[in-house]
Length: 97
Image (cartoon, rainbow, N blue to C red; front, side, top):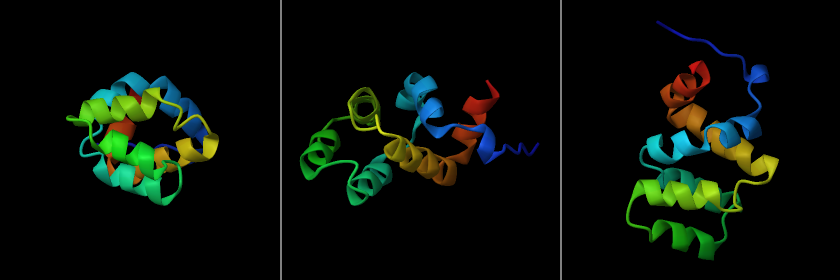
């Protein structure tokens, strides 16, 4: 079953805020995401190092999502676009709930 969803119907910032707790638990292999956020200047070198030093993916995602890093709309857009490209079934699953 293929599920299509319109980009226009998804407010990226609202998605990140609404599903924060699920994203902390369900994002798999977030290291490429942190690399992208560093490259796009969402994370500073210091913040990147702090997050990457945490022992589990869940702790890393918690620090990212519960901290100030994704408060700006452009940062949420980068985060959402990464998930949609790299983990589309997670995005679809959350949007269907």
